[in-house]
Length: 113
Length: 114
Image (cartoon, rainbow over all chains, first blue to last red; front, side, top):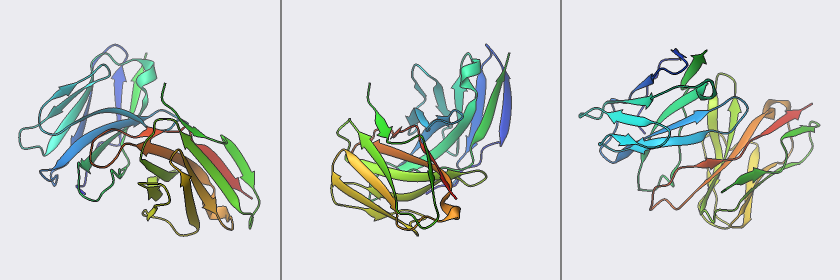
């Protein structure tokens, strides 16, 4: 599995966009990039995933660089409820991994009023 | 709304007790997973199962076993609980490895072994 590097913590003002970077320079061609978040005392929650194209859903946008070595999760209008730990996780789409996810330390995003 | 339900939110057990943590999902998912989460160590995979009666070791299986007799239920067993197994335990499920779908996690069981 590819290794990831995320900043330990970030701050964001409420209503502003939160841009969370992730470096995954060793990602292989068949690994997707998944983003999850974990709000305090809850289980992690799926946000979005992508392979090489940018993706958007009702929660966030995912920008993946052309060389796929890094990505950015964008929360367009952060709210206090977005305060959480955000995990960037490369994952093999097939093979024998059975969909296992390996969680790193993630980024603690704190949204301030 | 799809759900992964863990039987207890908080649990206190004594050292040496046999402990069962239960997880039930209502999404007809093939895959189920048990993680534990500790400060500074993040989430670590204990065991997973991709089918009924099938199980695979994760990264930290020592001291644990699992049981999956029915598709919707995945149990984590601590044969003889020890204080170093005090942790938050999280269950998750997902569809088959041949298709992508994200994990759905339960709310977690905070186990304290005294």
